[in-house]
Length: 341
Image 1 (spheres, rainbow, N blue to C red):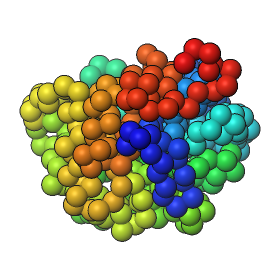
Image 2 (cartoon, rainbow, N blue to C red):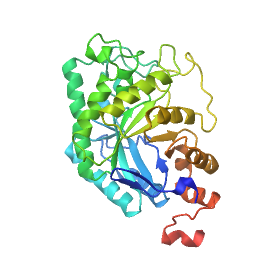
Image 3 (tube, rainbow, N blue to C red):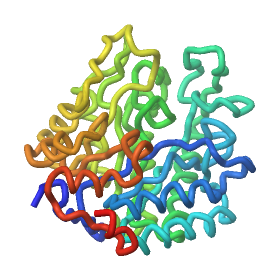
Image 4 (cartoon, rainbow, N blue to C red):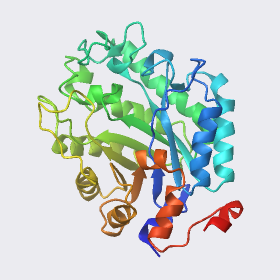
């Protein structure tokens, strides 16, 4: 049995294999209301049919002005719940588990009239506006918005939730010395906002539901943080209630001034392994892992507990079935498709 196709369990989350569909924004909410439509239904359910163990839906925002664009998903209203439930129920019907990534774009909210951020520092680039620094009361209200969105996700039927603390969005902005120049408690402790969000979400989800946190391990920009800072953040986040870490990198500025990474297949795997070894907490590795042999090696070598595939699943919705065949494992083929395998 290929290690990639062994089961994984964490709390109430029981996965049939170690393959995760990474969250990828579709920018396809044409009504601009945050509600998933038929595109999202087909997109996610097809990957469940294709054999993914866990689907993580794209960044879903906790308030309208927290979206990257007005075409993104949201969970700021109970009106959103039925459309999410429709997708979640269908994914379950086809043997996969599903979570939603909750986030807020912060200073990277392109369509917000005025974005908000920890500090009034714009993201480089002409399409980004000058953000307004959140007040302490607004920060605390934002924490509650994450919790309210989590309540709605649970009502919709998710198996897990992921908090987006990576790629230069709001939680990442608070935890980076590059973008958080506050003089209050949220600037003195760069993990504080993330910790409060985690605790608030953990308090409203079932006790056995695992909570995932996505982190950027390295920023690659001058004045940004590196892996040692991420490990300290992860320790604080684990203590607050995170059960798994999804380890990515970059996103807080144009890559280059702090070192340009190589982007060969598996380039982020060492970050995942370092966090796994430092915390003894399960991790998801991500980043050009669509070669089945490489994905198998990541699990078999103990670099990570789960492998997230992103663009590989955009190119091939049935990547898990083809990976199983390549690794000489038995693919979990829907009966309607068995004649092709």
